[in-house]
View 1 (cartoon, rainbow, N blue to C red):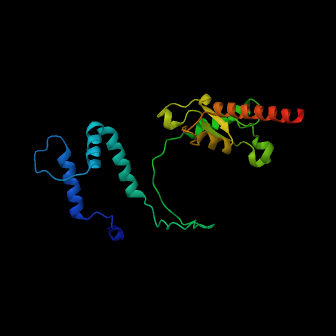
View 2: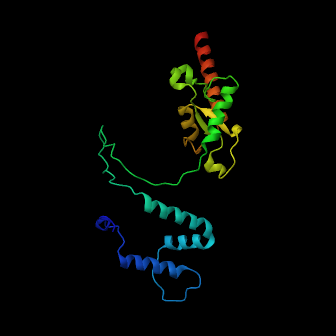
Length: 208
Protein backbone atom coordinates (compact mmCIF):
# COMPACT_ATOMS: atom_id res chain seq x y z
CA UNK A 1 0.00 0.00 0.00
CA UNK A 2 2.78 2.44 0.87
CA UNK A 3 5.22 1.36 -1.85
CA UNK A 4 8.16 0.62 0.44
CA UNK A 5 7.67 3.68 2.65
CA UNK A 6 7.59 1.45 5.73
CA UNK A 7 11.33 0.88 5.27
CA UNK A 8 11.87 4.51 6.29
CA UNK A 9 12.56 4.67 10.05
CA UNK A 10 10.32 7.77 10.24
CA UNK A 11 7.32 5.78 8.98
CA UNK A 12 4.41 5.68 11.45
CA UNK A 13 3.15 2.19 12.30
CA UNK A 14 -0.41 1.52 13.55
CA UNK A 15 0.51 1.83 17.24
CA UNK A 16 2.20 5.17 16.56
CA UNK A 17 -0.82 6.43 14.63
CA UNK A 18 -3.09 5.30 17.48
CA UNK A 19 -0.96 7.20 20.00
CA UNK A 20 -1.01 10.35 17.88
CA UNK A 21 -4.77 10.29 17.34
CA UNK A 22 -5.20 9.65 21.07
CA UNK A 23 -3.19 12.80 21.74
CA UNK A 24 -5.40 14.78 19.37
CA UNK A 25 -8.52 13.58 21.21
CA UNK A 26 -6.97 14.37 24.60
CA UNK A 27 -6.01 17.97 23.87
CA UNK A 28 -9.43 18.89 22.49
CA UNK A 29 -11.77 20.73 24.80
CA UNK A 30 -14.17 18.62 26.82
CA UNK A 31 -11.95 15.54 27.13
CA UNK A 32 -12.21 13.82 30.52
CA UNK A 33 -10.55 10.47 29.82
CA UNK A 34 -7.17 8.98 30.63
CA UNK A 35 -4.21 11.35 30.52
CA UNK A 36 -1.67 10.48 27.81
CA UNK A 37 1.60 11.98 26.68
CA UNK A 38 1.49 14.38 23.76
CA UNK A 39 3.74 16.82 21.98
CA UNK A 40 3.48 20.60 21.86
CA UNK A 41 3.01 20.56 18.08
CA UNK A 42 -0.09 18.38 18.35
CA UNK A 43 -1.58 20.86 20.81
CA UNK A 44 -0.89 23.76 18.45
CA UNK A 45 -2.46 21.96 15.47
CA UNK A 46 -5.60 21.07 17.42
CA UNK A 47 -5.86 24.68 18.64
CA UNK A 48 -5.64 25.90 15.05
CA UNK A 49 -8.42 23.56 13.94
CA UNK A 50 -10.54 24.67 16.89
CA UNK A 51 -10.01 28.40 16.40
CA UNK A 52 -9.85 28.52 12.56
CA UNK A 53 -11.89 25.54 11.33
CA UNK A 54 -12.74 26.84 7.84
CA UNK A 55 -9.16 27.80 7.00
CA UNK A 56 -7.70 24.57 8.37
CA UNK A 57 -10.25 22.33 6.66
CA UNK A 58 -9.51 24.01 3.34
CA UNK A 59 -5.81 23.32 3.85
CA UNK A 60 -6.54 19.71 4.84
CA UNK A 61 -8.62 19.14 1.70
CA UNK A 62 -5.82 20.58 -0.43
CA UNK A 63 -3.35 18.19 1.21
CA UNK A 64 -5.63 15.23 0.53
CA UNK A 65 -5.81 16.19 -3.15
CA UNK A 66 -2.03 16.47 -3.27
CA UNK A 67 -1.47 13.12 -1.61
CA UNK A 68 -3.91 11.46 -4.02
CA UNK A 69 -2.50 13.07 -7.17
CA UNK A 70 1.27 13.41 -6.77
CA UNK A 71 4.30 12.53 -4.72
CA UNK A 72 7.98 13.26 -4.73
CA UNK A 73 9.71 10.35 -6.43
CA UNK A 74 13.32 9.30 -5.92
CA UNK A 75 15.02 12.35 -4.46
CA UNK A 76 18.72 11.86 -5.21
CA UNK A 77 21.25 11.90 -2.40
CA UNK A 78 23.09 15.15 -1.84
CA UNK A 79 26.42 15.34 -3.61
CA UNK A 80 29.63 16.27 -1.84
CA UNK A 81 31.31 19.67 -2.11
CA UNK A 82 32.68 19.28 -5.65
CA UNK A 83 32.44 21.11 -8.95
CA UNK A 84 29.76 18.70 -10.16
CA UNK A 85 26.27 17.85 -8.96
CA UNK A 86 23.74 15.28 -10.08
CA UNK A 87 20.71 16.85 -11.80
CA UNK A 88 17.96 16.03 -14.27
CA UNK A 89 16.15 13.19 -12.51
CA UNK A 90 12.37 13.53 -13.09
CA UNK A 91 10.48 14.47 -9.93
CA UNK A 92 6.80 14.96 -9.28
CA UNK A 93 5.71 17.42 -6.63
CA UNK A 94 2.56 19.13 -5.43
CA UNK A 95 2.35 22.62 -3.99
CA UNK A 96 -0.11 25.40 -3.25
CA UNK A 97 0.28 28.48 -5.43
CA UNK A 98 -1.55 31.76 -5.97
CA UNK A 99 -4.19 31.83 -8.68
CA UNK A 100 -3.21 33.92 -11.71
CA UNK A 101 -5.43 35.02 -14.57
CA UNK A 102 -3.85 35.18 -18.04
CA UNK A 103 -6.29 37.55 -19.87
CA UNK A 104 -5.33 40.68 -17.87
CA UNK A 105 -1.67 39.95 -18.57
CA UNK A 106 -2.34 39.66 -22.31
CA UNK A 107 -4.41 42.87 -22.24
CA UNK A 108 -1.57 44.71 -20.49
CA UNK A 109 0.77 43.90 -23.37
CA UNK A 110 -1.85 44.77 -26.00
CA UNK A 111 -2.61 48.09 -24.29
CA UNK A 112 1.02 49.17 -24.64
CA UNK A 113 1.18 47.99 -28.24
CA UNK A 114 -2.05 49.79 -29.16
CA UNK A 115 -0.53 53.04 -27.93
CA UNK A 116 2.30 52.49 -30.40
CA UNK A 117 4.94 52.14 -27.70
CA UNK A 118 7.61 49.42 -27.87
CA UNK A 119 7.54 46.79 -25.18
CA UNK A 120 10.18 47.76 -22.65
CA UNK A 121 11.02 46.85 -19.09
CA UNK A 122 9.49 49.53 -16.87
CA UNK A 123 12.51 49.41 -14.57
CA UNK A 124 15.63 49.26 -16.76
CA UNK A 125 14.04 50.14 -20.17
CA UNK A 126 15.34 46.94 -21.76
CA UNK A 127 13.70 46.63 -25.21
CA UNK A 128 12.63 43.09 -26.06
CA UNK A 129 12.23 43.54 -29.82
CA UNK A 130 15.33 45.73 -30.06
CA UNK A 131 17.41 43.04 -28.35
CA UNK A 132 15.92 39.87 -29.84
CA UNK A 133 14.19 40.94 -33.03
CA UNK A 134 11.19 38.78 -33.93
CA UNK A 135 11.98 36.44 -31.04
CA UNK A 136 11.26 39.26 -28.59
CA UNK A 137 8.29 40.73 -30.47
CA UNK A 138 5.13 40.85 -28.38
CA UNK A 139 6.79 39.44 -25.27
CA UNK A 140 7.44 40.82 -21.79
CA UNK A 141 7.26 39.53 -18.25
CA UNK A 142 4.04 40.80 -16.64
CA UNK A 143 4.47 41.46 -12.93
CA UNK A 144 2.05 42.38 -10.12
CA UNK A 145 3.39 45.59 -8.61
CA UNK A 146 1.90 44.49 -5.29
CA UNK A 147 2.63 40.75 -4.91
CA UNK A 148 -0.39 38.49 -4.61
CA UNK A 149 0.95 36.99 -1.40
CA UNK A 150 0.66 40.52 0.06
CA UNK A 151 -2.64 41.58 -1.50
CA UNK A 152 -4.38 38.22 -1.11
CA UNK A 153 -7.46 37.56 -3.23
CA UNK A 154 -8.07 40.66 -5.34
CA UNK A 155 -9.43 41.99 -8.64
CA UNK A 156 -6.43 42.83 -10.82
CA UNK A 157 -6.57 45.97 -12.98
CA UNK A 158 -4.14 46.89 -15.76
CA UNK A 159 -2.49 49.66 -13.67
CA UNK A 160 -1.69 46.95 -11.10
CA UNK A 161 0.58 45.22 -13.62
CA UNK A 162 4.05 46.18 -14.83
CA UNK A 163 6.08 45.01 -17.83
CA UNK A 164 9.49 43.82 -16.70
CA UNK A 165 12.47 41.92 -18.02
CA UNK A 166 13.21 38.65 -16.26
CA UNK A 167 16.23 40.10 -14.46
CA UNK A 168 14.35 43.06 -12.94
CA UNK A 169 11.45 40.82 -12.04
CA UNK A 170 13.79 38.61 -10.03
CA UNK A 171 15.24 41.70 -8.31
CA UNK A 172 11.68 42.69 -7.31
CA UNK A 173 11.20 39.28 -5.70
CA UNK A 174 14.64 38.91 -4.13
CA UNK A 175 14.89 38.84 -0.34
CA UNK A 176 17.59 41.32 0.63
CA UNK A 177 18.47 43.11 3.86
CA UNK A 178 15.16 42.37 5.53
CA UNK A 179 13.00 43.12 2.49
CA UNK A 180 11.26 40.16 0.85
CA UNK A 181 9.98 42.15 -2.15
CA UNK A 182 9.96 45.63 -3.69
CA UNK A 183 7.77 47.53 -6.15
CA UNK A 184 9.04 48.16 -9.70
CA UNK A 185 8.87 51.93 -9.09
CA UNK A 186 11.14 51.56 -6.04
CA UNK A 187 13.61 49.40 -7.96
CA UNK A 188 13.69 51.91 -10.85
CA UNK A 189 14.33 54.76 -8.43
CA UNK A 190 17.17 52.81 -6.87
CA UNK A 191 18.74 52.14 -10.27
CA UNK A 192 18.44 55.80 -11.24
CA UNK A 193 20.22 56.84 -8.06
CA UNK A 194 23.01 54.34 -8.75
CA UNK A 195 23.27 55.65 -12.32
CA UNK A 196 23.52 59.26 -11.17
CA UNK A 197 26.15 58.30 -8.62
CA UNK A 198 28.17 56.56 -11.34
CA UNK A 199 27.97 59.67 -13.55
CA UNK A 200 29.18 61.89 -10.71
CA UNK A 201 32.04 59.53 -9.95
CA UNK A 202 33.06 59.45 -13.61
CA UNK A 203 32.93 63.24 -13.79
CA UNK A 204 35.03 63.56 -10.64
CA UNK A 205 37.59 61.14 -12.05
CA UNK A 206 37.80 63.08 -15.35
CA UNK A 207 38.19 66.40 -13.52
CA UNK A 208 41.05 65.06 -11.41
